[in-house]
Length: 113
Ligand SMILES: [Zn+2]
Image: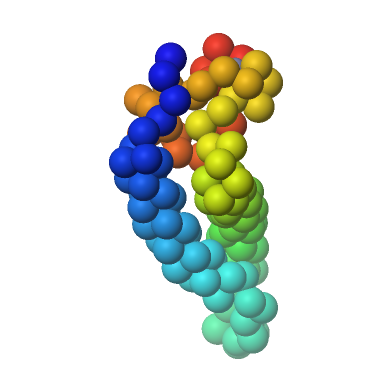
């Protein structure tokens, strides 16, 4: 497998930056949803309170996944800066371009997992 061309790295960096942008907006939304809200006790019954708690827990899960992804994308951008982008962390072989197109944040070549 050949190393990535400058052009390919540039494309992948743009893709990572687009994803970072989208993710930041999505994180803002889920953080806003996680802010504690004043419950109107006269209006909110027990069932809707349970709905509320369930929604909060779904949003919290989503938010955790977003934070993990944010770290992966930032790490990938840092590797581009360092010049180690596209190299498998396990075997130090090259990560195929086709794989990076789908998972630009990938740190493994696909054989190493
Ligand atoms: Zn590998």
